[in-house]
Image 1: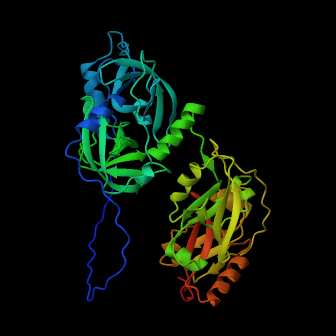
Image 2 (image 1 turned 60 degrees about the vertical axis):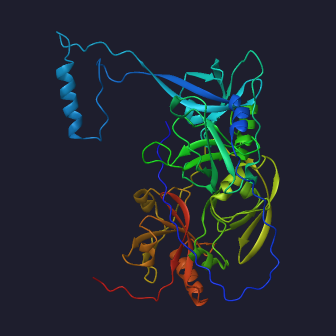
Length: 505
């Protein structure tokens, strides 16, 4: 049921050379646990806490014909008509032209894994194992089958919590601290691969903090312990028998294990499971900002020593960030004492923060660090739209900024209609982008709106020209602009090349 994933991995080699070796005080090496002679004792202890999960749902038959359905083809495909003609010949209408009775609904079944975290009957699994199911069955190691009810599920982290009613207390497993797991540590995976029942595989932690583009909170543990279809939702154990991950996805061109599996860290799982048990849904921390990665060009234009942090593209009005006085153009360097080296770190750290907590937020603003205090809110289900206000900008002649390759104009009512610009949008309109220029290289296009230049608002083309020229005089290599496009706001660094007049053509 899990959609396939493909990852690109690039490797390299580092060569070290030494001419003279001097005695140096070295830090003590961490003590690695030796490879066990056997995993049998540990597996025997853990197997009773792992369950098989079978979920089924009723799928109505599409169309009004009985028998095979037309396969799904791209719109307009010649194969679609071919199969329709074939099925019409083999399943013709009735004597008076009526269609044959509709086929009865079908039952679809999926198999997965899970594990018990409460002896009273609380089971954890992946959301995609039970998604859409109208009947869920949990099978214990002794082949006892129990009907399960859904306590809560969370699509963003792919976690679900089930409840069964056993006749006696079940063998519950304990969560461990996934942050303490190290690359190279031994791990065990137990699950239900291909519906075969409790199967044990061993391997090591191959990597940590993997982002496999499955959601905003990706922070997977990678392991080479064999994980296959049906292992989804099963536990990943450390050598103390603690659950440090939930096996969720694999990289596989064929669908079978090639030694690249991914597990949700237990520290994230524990937090989400507790919320699902208490509230039936996940309650996440929310800051109320749209962010983007700090590129080397952006870092240089802002005076940052390195390209790190999360650049604030916009602030949600009335949200926690706005109340804390964060603003567009700030670079978030630390949140609640944790370094934000990459943009993707911030959503996960904020989401895991308790709602209502006051936390320090360190930002880079106007060339130096500023520490603010934000009260973490709860992530809303839907974004609220800003109220619309009419724009009464007077028409004016376009202004050409040839050095960047853009032509500018005020935002007029006609331009709002033409480029579908919101009534409350402020800034300066880009009406033309010359090919082969810095603006074209950065993907700017007519209809984009320049909102800020060097973190200062602009309202007229003259504002943009003036601020660009001021940056040019500081000998910086690029100028930073906040651009509002069809896909939302983003910060764009534009190279300050030597001004060249465009010749009329």
